[in-house]
Length: 554
Ligand code: FBP
Image 1 (cartoon, helix red, strand yellow):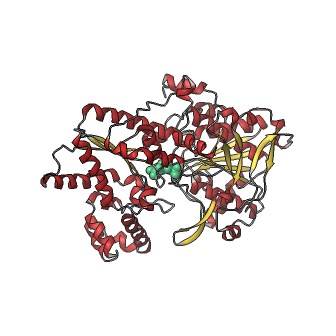
Image 2: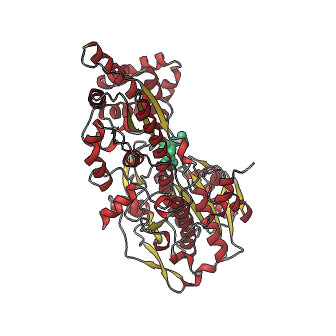
């Protein structure tokens, strides 16, 4: 592979560690807090996590420790969607392990959690790590979405770990994968296997968030990449003055990415799924809102605009949510019958006999391409694959129809032309920003230090992220502290609670305060490309979300 000059230059970037982790390992101790509780449903969660429930929060402090030089065999898994910085988590973990004891070994499980259950792995050495430092993607060992849930999968995981004489396993993943990390930690404790499990908070969606997890890695780079692209489109729109751009943005459930992009670029409209659900806004009302902005702007001869749409939106619009939930149940409960219907018209005819009247009517009204997309297979965690539903096209088609009606009725004289975009994969494997490069390296190093301290059932946690890296705090948060009970596949299960956009939080309030003006006027902001070199004011900025959340904490 021929490397670009930028790629080569990124190898030279020295990821920063907080002062507490950058010092000598002889001086790195762990301070434990008091017992903790789950977010809710304490007794039910305690019953599942008999050995690991309620452990204290761990924080690294200066002090004496003999354990950091232990010889360790550790396995690492990348799980779920790509997020910029994953390779640096592995680099931080590797460097920590080798600093502790040069004879320690790191194994990478190939293709995600199935690498563990199927015993597919490689040994990660210095040469391999150096080839991936500060790069995007998960291609060093690959990733996957297999969920470890059956007794056979748990026992196969133990088998592989024992064959490799692992002391610990590090799972780099989102809420579902870290829930799995907690379950594996508990299983290994129950079996007396002496194998520790540590999670690392990954997801561009930004919804693995908690008092002790200020951000999931990858959110910073992905949101900034999309914001650059939106800013570029906004400038084009303001130059040509002839198109409305409907931009769907990744983020399976939470709208953190759309909100951050709105704060960065100030589009005309941005729908926040959490608000749509809370206020029970219907699909028709969303289209009305778009039309109102189109009409008003047209009065000023501004027949152009930008609309941001979180990809999870469809699941938060009450009537669409009800339809999807009915479809999920029908398709799961009558799978073999559903599979017999081969064409879309056979599928729809069969569904009409099963759906409630309201959902059947909505299903029939949807453009056929969208209705078909609602029937696509669910992912292994039972989620609708919202990245494959063209919500931007749905809103474009419905708005076009309504505008055409207004034109015919003589209520609109302007022009209305649309373009649709979907930004998701463009940002998930980007070179990590300096923030993500440093944050990920620290998460990996901290995971090593948690293992050295003998802890299990923890997620690596780095705090005070709005401050310079040297001032960050590091430690671990017990996984059970992040949990609540949720209904999954018809059963109540302990899971890490998804952190959706807080409608009382500072980032949403900042957007809400400006949005009426944005809907009418052209106030675009152009954030430009992520900068990796140069003055701190340009290349050392966190997301606006993180900044506002921290100001809110003060
Ligand atoms: P994770 O939750 O695994 O981090 O993945 C997030 C995500 O990028 C979502 O934003 C998106 O909906 C989904 O993955 C897409 O999944 P896939 O990579 O399977 O297409």
